[in-house]
Length: 255
Image 1 (tube, rainbow, N blue to C red):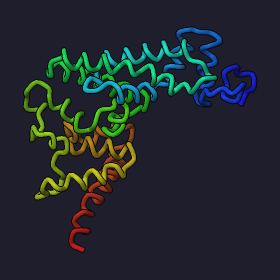
Image 2 (spheres, rainbow, N blue to C red):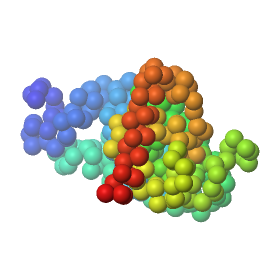
Image 3 (cartoon, helix red, strand yellow):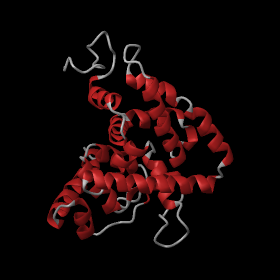
């Protein structure tokens, strides 16, 4: 640890977390838009955690996220490294989101809320594409937005009625479309979920786009390859491996 950092956790009994020391110290020494942005970026996981904990039904609201960032900025000004961790201080300030979230839930009609969530979902997908350099999996999108994958599927299928924008079943379970294996009943969804969570993010994205999971449109191999930055042959090989994993459900059921 650098002893010259005035807010280092090891100096004078300070409790500032190691991962926040450089951006917090840089901002405290010279508050500029750049140092502020870097500190906000560092505590973004804390902000998302606060939104998930205190945002209630409105946690997907862009307005709520904007307020959360403003509350985080305010918390930087009042933070004392000698009294506690930055994470706990930011989360304490984010408790104020509970009132805002409740108010939004009362005044926003369901269609408007879905429209806001769809906008938030689209912005988050674009942000992840830029950050990752490829199409994100639905698992990564769920982690980033705080929305469940079932909710993501609901938001996607809630587009204006049209042949290409509707999935086969309008129920909540429609977030898991039919497998490529004929004749499989709906109990297959548990196995699909097991297989999905055992995959890496790239293979998860292939699974999502190949089957059209969670309200996605099914994508051809060439388009999937383009979105993931890999070759069509690699997509086919990975898809075949995923299919073999799905098929294992049947080999195990007859053992």
